[in-house]
Length: 308
Image (cartoon, one colour):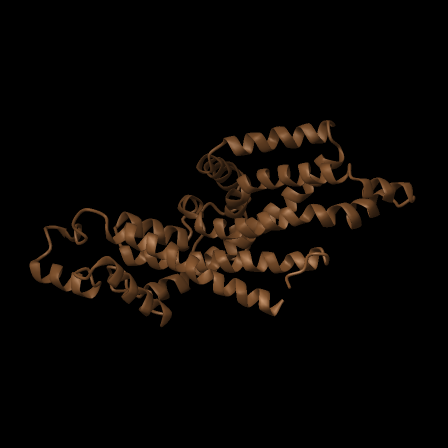
């Protein structure tokens, strides 16, 4: 296990370098004036432009810029936004809120998605199976900003069950509705994945053998079938957790959440390269670590899977 973990950590290095270089190159090699809009309606003075390019090493070739940037990242310096605020401090303030939102979305996705998938997979062709298939198709077909706006209107404004917007230091309850919106599409995909995998597993020989031995249906499903069917589900959840953190831009915008999604959205609009690159760098690391944890969990779900 230790050697496998170390090998995976070493494999992350070229992935981090490649992905961060791509986003760095896309942000800082875009055509146009990088100081446009940073001095109001007037063009920036030559002194400001020279200082700006010197501060962000824009006079150097792109590979040199990137090497200098990553040298600072290794030391914990993600640069400063155009307002002079360290990106690291901004991310630290916002990451907790986005992480809580991602946990709520993942919990909603796991409970509803796995539950619906199990019920559907055990009753193929029945009413529940058709209900799950139709409802998941509807959810997948509707854009997330429509789902968010509709739920916000009815559950927040008209019925008053949840708060309409979420402020800073939001409690867990305030994040329930945004979490359901963020995880809604993934719930549909997870339910379909769980349903198809469990249905296939229930037709295997060892499940028939378990039934022939007289084991109760609950034991056959809970002990024998779900253990194998959960492996692709856990894989999906692990990959999706990183995607949820990075894809919360629309949800955070709808509910005015003070999180990373709104921060990177504002950075893109302001052409604030340090904000965009710094945020993406952190999200890449979180995504890779989430995948590593998922791979390590495989061994706990199914002891036959060895990492040595």
